[in-house]
Image (cartoon, rainbow, N blue to C red; front, side, top):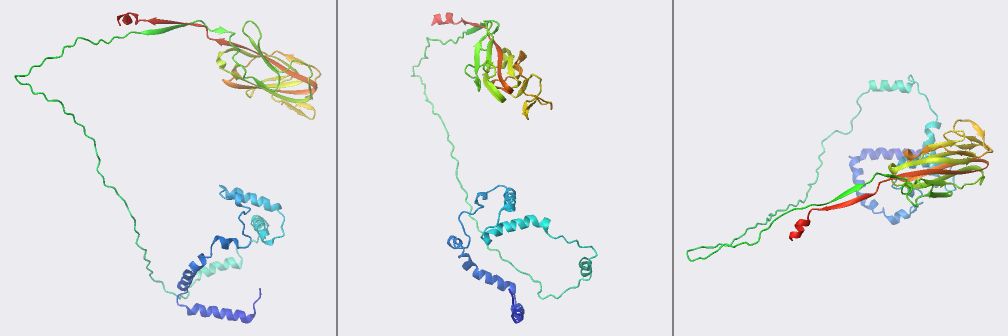
Length: 384
């Protein structure tokens, strides 16, 4: 925008005249603002807002209203504006232009080093040290501000407490020489007696090999074949997990799991990992605890580029071309919990392979008990 020299001189003259003509510019400005306040505020309405350019009922930032973290909102907008292309609407482009400017300006702007001997810096001290009082065009005065009286309404209650009182009036009997009275004669007497009737219970020693191994019936859930049967007449139960067979899996990694519920691990006299058949590598966990790894040990089992890594950093041949059957007889009771237990197996198969395991369990049950009632009240009942 350009102005002619004559226009600038006219404007300057007007400003000088305006500044000298008014006695109190601050008061005049205040009065002008007050006189236009009601007229301007009446224009702030919903209908006028909708008539403004670019008004919308659904701004793009509405999803962030009420957010508990403005930092996350700002960070997300900085990242999105980095790659957001300019649109055809120049007004709409101003948002990302401003965001990019604020985000990049501290790093991209030209930094000017100002030496301490620069005339601008050295001149400041001279100006401060040689400062002189200037012309004062307005004297300080006292201004009194009157605050309107503040009224409040307070309510109080006055009441009397009512307290219930009780009194009793007995019968007054006047006895004179003509009165004839007699005391009541009681023929019945009340006697309070007590007697005992108690139960005596005698139990035999605990029995080993009872119930069903401590596993709640019907609680086994697995993604492979399972069976739960009595293994022998001594009360040992066998839990089989996996199909007994050979080479029913193709090359790859197979994760399988079994869930079962135990009433009370303390009542188990035996719960052991009896046998494991697998081809080629296996690792077994119970409730997240490492139980067994074979045939070479290790703490993990992964297939890396067609090789097997058991956690020791050595890559081994995947297909061992043999079946493995071991009987580790590992005690699993310390790893059991009351309620749901989870057994997990991971098998790495080279050419073809399989996995099936057997767990033997025996439970300790309370022996049979005999109840005997002793009645000491029979003699008293005969008197009734």
